[in-house]
Length: 581
Image (cartoon, rainbow, N blue to C red; front, side, top):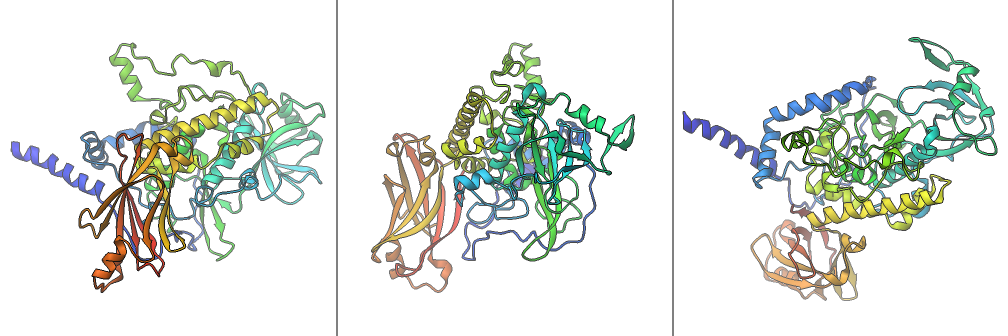
């Protein structure tokens, strides 16, 4: 009986370990998967009602209990603690360890660098609401952190108009515009958000505009509008600053969750907590202090593909007004981003130590009287990328592996200083000192995130072949050097050339991110081709294990690069990348 008691948990742990550490194919000769076929035509889905309170209760309480009772989750935690498991890999990756384009995500700035003008424009398809005719108010928005209303302009486009808090003018609207453009360039689907200055006399109340009073809806009146705008500051010309968020194309069908799938969407085949773009969002959210990243701030839209005509669900991130230093109408509290709203970890530590353990942010009260009201509370000194947490548990964030976090870090490190400056300029902040502080802090937090995750993983990427006369090279980028958090002079690279995993064939240090593969048909790989008779193309796949070394110190983790080499006269190509955690 004793043996049985020991064997059953041990067997279950072993099975879980094998499942958690198994991975897909290392490489493939098939064309690299760059697009997910999740825009197939589907029937009109049901409208799912949003319940913000259930969202909070579910993830804060019920989900936490469910995790503990989940054998797979527990085995993963035990395995990681024993250093024998690395966590379940994301499910939607191609053989290059990248995310294909889909209804969730599109590869943009990192893989296809955007110009300054493209970054400044972001998702915008118009220049904002049309001013040639009055704005017709069609409904009021009194729920959520930022009250406002919906208008229809002369072009027939609908916009949600939101206002900053009187005490923190420009804070929420600036955060929304900046983070929207950054998240769009990162690859996510977001609505168009613009800063507008409008004359209140341009507003007209439509017949459909309703307000709720004593639990009953009634027609909105001019008095309601006056009351709403009463505390909103005017500029010298009498105009009001506001954020205009354009309705996206299609029909909203509710929110989407950070776990499971949607049962009425046949295209939704990957559990959301195992999507790389949602796991890797943790790194990006930590950079932007986007602590309110939960289901309530998402939108699923039933839309039409303009090319195929297919109708499918597209997935949006919403409400970036709670990013950077803003928590919509008040500044972020130092707690946000440092622990869950109700966090057993920190509660337990303080209980065990009888309050002797002090949280790093516990006595930081800068949010109560921020130096720059238009920025709020956004800092880079206390910020720790490893210890960043959303305000409420996010299943995708909790499943994030080192590979996922590294992916998010390389996406955000692609934003150069001058690009960040240009994006922040789109917020039209009137206090230039506040603008400079915000730019500086965004850059400092970017570098902190990049430095942390690039230290955990080998930050080499963008492998490609290039010919220079009679020489063929395998080129790559050292992202830490590109991001100026490491120096090229302090870096060198150890590469191990192998064939069919049959052991070490050749090993060498190089000073640059350039590997000579062949010189006019002479080289390690050419020699193998000449000595062997190949019956299948798969036999022409070789590998290079690459490690990085800084200042002659410890070598980094390995990145295995698999490539098809058909001979010097033909075109080689990378067919697989495996990153070791």
